Length: 330
Image (cartoon, rainbow, N blue to C red; front, side, top):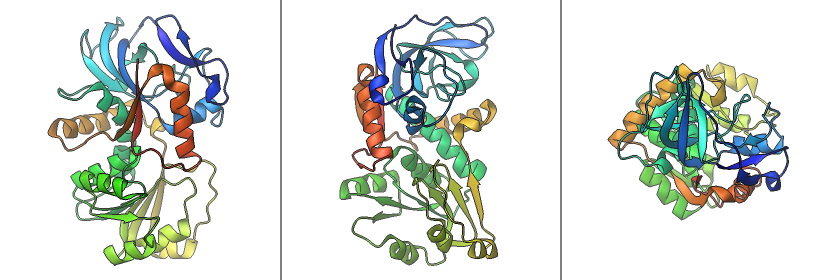
């Protein structure tokens, strides 16, 4: 089978595209013929060595996938041949990745793809949607009528946060870097979109939510906790899921006198049963048309190195050339 893989960590150029043996499912594993995959920042961190992780050699990159079951191991109970599935949490904790024509995945990390949802859409939503759901409901405890702020509502995680928060009955404030991205945010349901390059974002937040923000979802790699806490109302919460190298200063006094809390989490730490609960709600919203994937572009699997380079330009260097996910197809 064709696969995008590395023999050692390094820059995008270490990614090779070539033939590897097609894996054979054992135990509770499912062999998926891959229809689409998507790129996440964590993929680039593992490939570069920025995140130290145990990886097999050769190591197929990638966390997300969507496709069709073509073979099952003897212990598989939830899937059968021909089922369409999607999933994430691969390429982590010693598991092989997904950027190949076929992928062996334990059934606990796979979910049925709803009718009418393409492999492109399912792959684009996999990690980002589960991340958004865990952060909003398990950690952030979003409630109807609350005000939520999230940076970058047209991005991968941001677009899922906007849509899910609206589905939960919240009022959503977000930011965008251009009028085009702002329109995307509005179409996703955002109530107030701040053009951060031309507007005073802090003033705009205060004007729109004079009582403060209930839940602040932080996507920036260098969060300013002084600023964030200043915008929170009594009992406000902060969700942190970015900024591995950040060492931000916490304004302890303003923080504790408002009964605030900070919740940090990494999606891949959540056990399989919790991720499956998120996936079930995601599938319901997909079937009801309440959740849509934000895909910026579709590329070929052979272009994995180029896709990683583009993702890094946006994640690490703020290029702002993406408005959604990069999806690749074999």
